[in-house]
Length: 321
Image 1 (tube, rainbow, N blue to C red):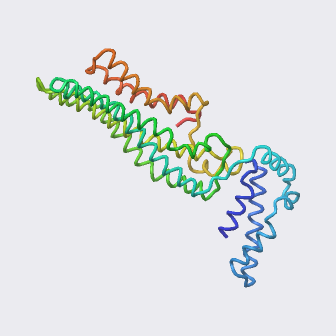
Image 2: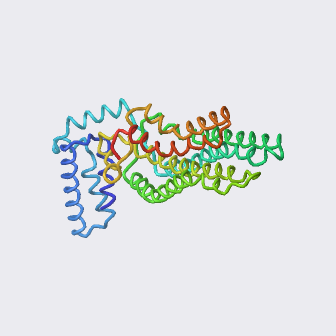
Image 3: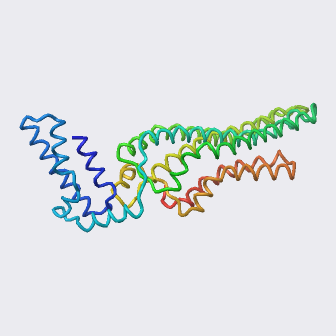
C-alpha cells in the first residue's frame, strides 16, 4: 500500500496546493485503497494488486474529468513544460549534506585561524619578534586559504540555488529526519559558542606581569566559539536549502511544511546578510584591531556580534521563529 501512496504523491507533486486538489487527491487515494483491498480479498498477491491499481488509476489525464481537475491538470502540464524542475534524488541529497559538512568545517576553520592569528605576536612577540609576526601571517594565510577553498568545494551543488528543483516525499522525509537529529547538536554548538564569548575575558583575571598567555588564550576561546557557531549554522543552512527546493504553492511543497517550517528570507539581500554576518564580524574585528592595536578592547566586538546575531536573523527572515 505504501507503494500506491508514493505513486499517488508523485502524480500530484506538481499540482497546486488548493482545497480542490487536496480533496481530489484524498478521493483518488480512497478509490485506490478500496480497489487494492478488493484485489487482496480475491486472493491476488500484494505485488499484483499494486500493479493492477496503478494501471487502473495511474493516469491523471484520464481521471481528471471525473475528479473535476481538467483545467488544473492542463495548467499544471503547461507550467511544467514552461518551467521544468530538476528532480533531486536521495543519493544527490546525501552527497550534498556530506559536502555541506565539509564546506562548513573549512569555513569555520578559516575564520578560526584568522582570529587566533593575533595570539602569535601577543604570546611570542616580545621574545621572538619577527618569528611571531611570521606565525601570525601564516595563520592568516591558512585561514584565508580555507575560506577561499570552502567556496569551491560545493561547486557541483550550485545548481540547487540556480535551477528550479524538487525532491520527492521519501527524500523530504529523509531531510526532515536528518534535521531533527542535527538540531540538538546545533543547539549545543551555539550554546557552547556563546558561553565561550562570555567567559573569554576570564583568563585576563589571572594575568601575571610579563606573561601574555592569558590574553592569547582569550583569542583562542573566541576563535573556538566562532568556529562552533559557524560550523553548526552552515550545516543548518544546508538543510534549509534542501527544504526550500519544492514550490510552496504545490502539493510537493507540503512535504516539508507538514512538520518542519522552512526558513525563508525577506529577499536575496536579507539572505546574503545572514550568510556573511560572521565573516563580516571577523573582518571588522581584524581591521579595527590592526588599526588601533587595542586588542584588549576590540574583543568586545565578538560579544556584541553574538548578542546581535539573533536580532539580525529574526529581522531578515520572512517568517517568525
